[in-house]
Length: 207
Image (cartoon, rainbow, N blue to C red):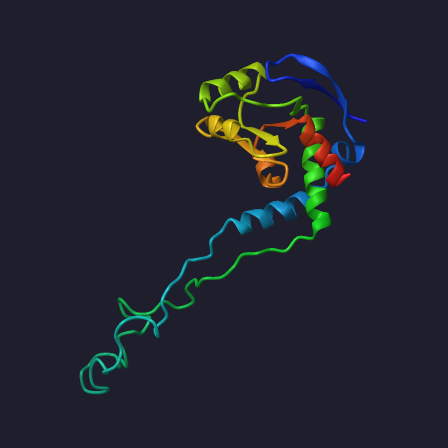
């Protein structure tokens, strides 16, 4: 079983934790990770882009000029796509970008990312994280105590207003919960910080 040190928010080592092999010690499945990230990135797209066809633009009605005798090419309407201000041919229209991924694949991808972070020694476990007030300075001190650099994701079991508001003005630091964190978010950061309770919850759900 993989083992990690447990630290407190002051940066002191307070013990050791054995991680569940089936959650934090599997061989990562890159295909599952790719499929889930592709699905999650697609879900971020609004899909509200739209263009007007020749039937939607203003105009039309009367023929611009008579069919023959003018020396110009024949034309039946000023909403034609070849006219300036006319309709758009094959333009984008609102639609969804949803890509379905099975639950087993989503869980496999999450286990793969967590296992990969453990293998690279980029997963840290803390016994808990609480702040008495909403102060960015306090959160910066916690990050310094834990020697965290680069992009960091802090995963809690339940939303903590003080922690989330204290961290939201710090660049490259996100605070989320076990239920809401995505594979894409975990991949997009250098270090993942889990509370001991978050580790237990992952082992219960994914194990």
